[in-house]
Image 1 (spheres, protein in one colour):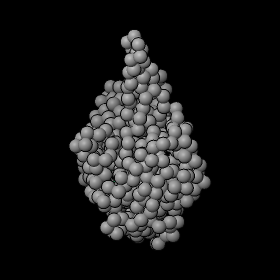
Image 2 (image 1 turned 180 degrees about the vertical axis):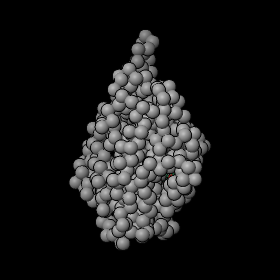
Image 3 (image 1 turned 180 degrees about the horizontal axis):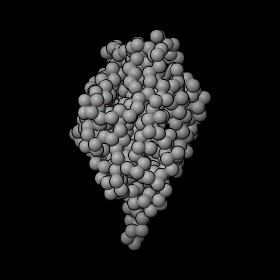
Image 4 (image 1 turned 120 degrees about the vertical axis):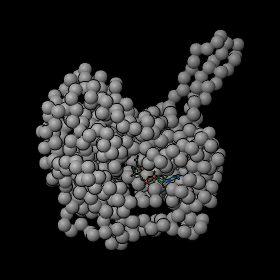
Length: 485
Ligand code: NAD
């Protein structure tokens, strides 16, 4: 179904101007809920990336570079207020584009506003130090922007990921070139329009939609870029890191995970149950920090599986705007990947404990899968090791703390972990021993936590975004030593 969109979608935004991509080419943007074409977007080229980097450099040398930290913060705060005024419009765009239920789109728009408020308020609070040094010296540090920062964003949470990376980079005074995903980029375009309205100087933010191997690769290879922020797959993350190495620039990689929630027998199961399931099916499981593995102590294994299964059977899957529990997957390719894992579960004789239902009037062209709970999965099985990126959770039994840790730390990834136990000493022992970037105790925040530094270890990537920490990542520390006698 053709949807009415509030602005022209087939343009790049460079140096404060909207125009067609340099080659005049466009790409179709699919609606995951019915497979129709939602819009045409610009197919940005290497020339467009060149122009965007030049515009960012000009902004740094001009009006944008001259602003004080407080002035940058005020612009971000203004933008945050405007996002809040447009929550419904942004939520609808994200829902149509990504296929997520409207309520999730709404939550993402509010999170975007929070990032802008947070980084707006933090912009003028990044302090340096004075360092006791030799007699007759004053030594101090301050933080400077890298310069031009490149932001490569995936399709699963465009608003949230733009908020956390572009928001922090702008707060520190960098000029940004944003390459949204070819599968979902409407809210990146809306973000640029809101930045314009808020009064950002031309070139502070530039948006070049297009294909990963064209606009994305051109941005990562560009010698005029001083920092790269990438969220997406491990394979592409490695390419981005290699490109960054060729230009010897820093790179932040956020590459997903196979995050566990670990349920001990003493846990408050009533409290845990909603978190166990929601963190697996939120955004149809297409969440880097999805809790795709549920590790359960054997004494309560059957009870937890039965109670999770009950929730799974109540899940309803349908089009984004129907605003049910779960929407479609982003693309035919993602549908194929998830279907492959479901077939593998069947072929390996694994126990499908429960599935949700696709509503009978879901459009035939949409990429729907039934959310699936698979119980009693051996911890070395592909379903327990590989990121599926769909609404599929595996439940694994364990005996005691040591085995829980061995299994939890036994994948290539290390992004987030959840621990459910009433034992305070065990909470701390587990939090220390888990190999990952974030641990939640008696709660779990898939995708959440504007204030909380976030990032991975191992195949989940490196560098931290979110929270105050991101401001350090988006700046370079300079040390100054003055001999004054
Ligand atoms: P991807 O990593 O290929 O795409 C993410 C972003 O990188 C997009 O903007 C894309 O255009 C860009 N890109 C692609 N190739 C590039 C290149 N050579 N140089 C520079 N940029 C490039 O991910 P995908 O193909 O959309 O999804 C595949 C898998 O990745 C999923 O199944 C999932 O497992 C994982 N994924 C993880 C996250 C996450 O949040 N960590 C997000 C999306 C996808």
